[in-house]
Length: 120
Image 1 (cartoon, rainbow, N blue to C red):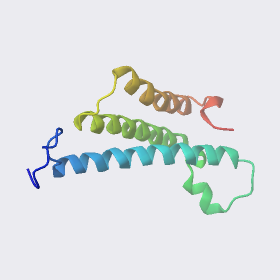
Image 2: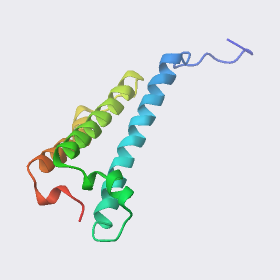
Image 3: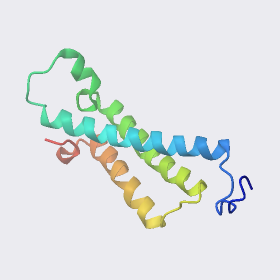
């Protein structure tokens, strides 16, 4: 105990905890950015955009690449929850499934060419 204060009830913060927190933050940001890119691509799909923009957004990618992209987003969301769990902030299994499943369903929709798998 430094300075005579009470001990930290959660214990000391280790470098592994810091890494896990960074992984959780990074995967959360990646997931949000993926959704924002898809929504922006859908909204701007019928607008004139520069050629570089069509390579940037998943909507313009080949189907196989889009499926791999959304599977990666699903894995990022699962990693986010795994990191929180290892930090002692675990959630109910239903919440984890409910937040990962939409990305898996979306990837399946893209793979099978479903019209609902784009934000138009």
